[in-house]
Length: 226
Image (cartoon, rainbow, N blue to C red):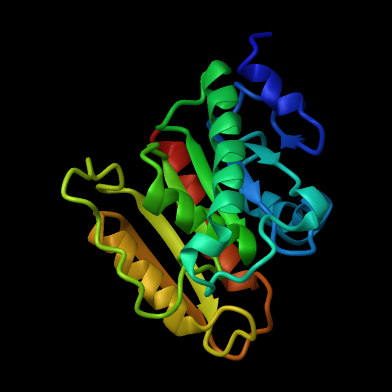
């Protein structure tokens, strides 16, 4: 096994579903604040699996130190959480590199997350230049207060051109306001991503069945192109 592939065996990283390199897709899945990979398996992976073909997905679930990726809030000034967000992004890149060593390239690796993990997915897409097959952003927002300027730099290579993204939120989520998710969607679309936004009326801070149905439809579509 190469040094890159060893990242999948790092402490706190759980690999579920098909063995790496054997499935049509690999999904790097980030948990929310005060959660862990076991929570994500129970509330997301375990519920998604019946909606997908057998053996279609390798799930990679890293654990944040202390069950929290960053101590502040997504709406804090970006500089206050930058170092922690950079560390989380490095974890994501390391896992993507490890999956690439098993044959999962940019056409077959999806980035996904819920709540704080979804905010990190958006942050990674907006700040790093890695190409993904798709992204799932369940109740997420981009870092910074409302109205933060997220105009891409002039030399941005637009790695998000054509990237399929599913973004979801409730219409009155207690942690991530819908307006913040809408700002994130606008920023992603501004970089060329093809974002579907689904708004759940009256739901709690969770991943609803309709959101899982939509995610499964996207994953099946991506798997079919492999």
